[in-house]
Amino acid sequence: MRALFTAALALLLAACAQPGPASRDTIVLLPEQNGRHTAVIVNSGGQQVTLDHPYAGARSGGPVQAYESSAADVQGIFGAALAAQPARPRSFQLYFIEGSDTFTDETRRTVEQIFGEIARRPAPEIAVVGHTDRVGSDQSNDALSLKRAEFVRGELIKRGLAPDGIQASGRGEREPIVPTADGVSEPRNRRVEIIVR
Image (cartoon, rainbow, N blue to C red; front, side, top):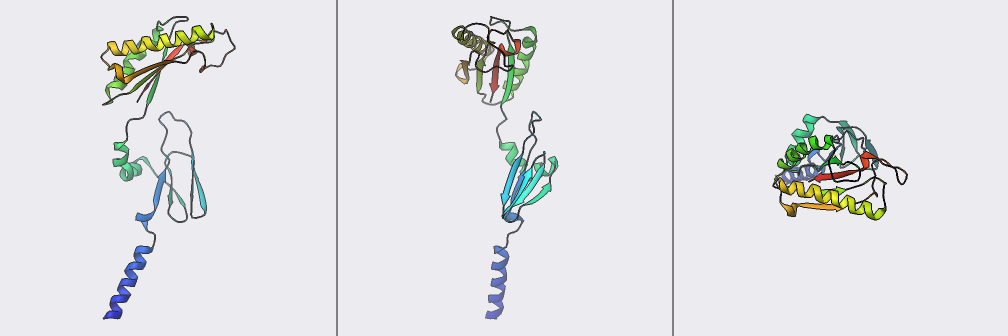
């Protein structure tokens, strides 16, 4: 009887020591919201697998094994964890008439989208970053970019958003979307970026 008990205990311990599905890590590359191409390399057990397209997966915890997942698989395995994540930051561009803090007509239509995004977040944090094109001096562009950012911050506050949840800053001509020579007027660089977290 004692020999049978010892053999049963040895089998139980051996079974617990073997790597099984519960002891393996699962890695799945999710698609980016903006469709940008990404990749990740998984190293495990002396092997390497590159995940280079949405829903490419790997299981590690021994020799790494590649597999194909799907949106439904990810929801089934990781649904609770994904639901617990905060919403991803969203970025919006507001454009201005040259030399001013007056919105272009296109930007006036974008403003309502921004408020829709802010309303979906329980405790939004908002960064407002002003930019200019390369017309004018560094000093005047620094002042104009901050003026644009402060103008947008003021508009958000007028619409009922808490002032302490909105930070404004100006970057002048330092971070153009479209690189240009000094003195070149470029409408896409005359902007305020609003980042909603």
